[in-house]
Length: 76
Image (cartoon, rainbow, N blue to C red; front, side):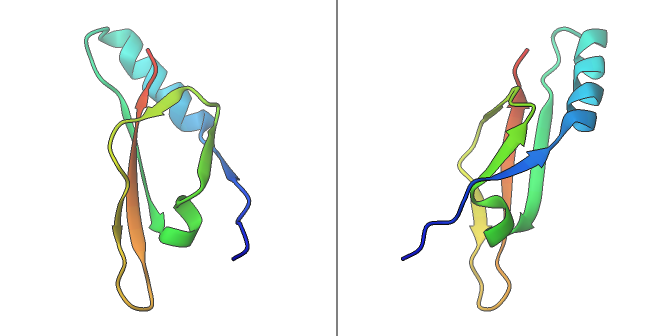
């Protein structure tokens, strides 16, 4: 079985917004939620890498179209 390469997703703009939000309230928790097709998000790497995945990915592995969700928390 062929191994798929790691894909990199540029989330710099999202990171900037979440940092600004967190700077306003240091007790807040900031999350980035990725939704998409299983094939697109299963091997995703974030850039910048300032996030930690918090939950196990959730995938709806239905017949033809398979969608999923991955939750990342901003590293404060």
